[in-house]
Length: 134
Image (tube, rainbow, N blue to C red; front, top):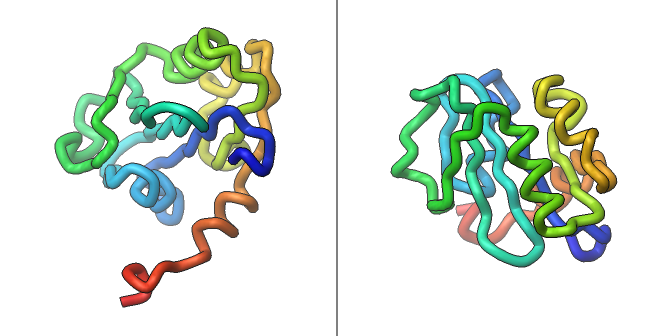
């Protein structure tokens, strides 16, 4: 993230085949219904951001990310958090294929740059540790 000048990374995921793995990889949360975001700031603790309308989307006790929020409009919550922290560049994994339009529209109103981050995230995730290979 720092190498790419990002203040934070938003990882988007949903239950459709192939789009849930990134969220599990960075948070330990397994999506079984709807969608979720993981907000990974360059400095500070990560947050799982669930849409309020989806009460059962997976076992929320399993992930190692313990900060969890349920806003009415997740994109609005993410925008407000970014503006509170005065972030300038937000990387987004899944902006073009996963993020709902309603949340993108909210984020696009912010005073920061939204940076598609799929290739960079996938390349970092492709590097495997001995534990992952075992």
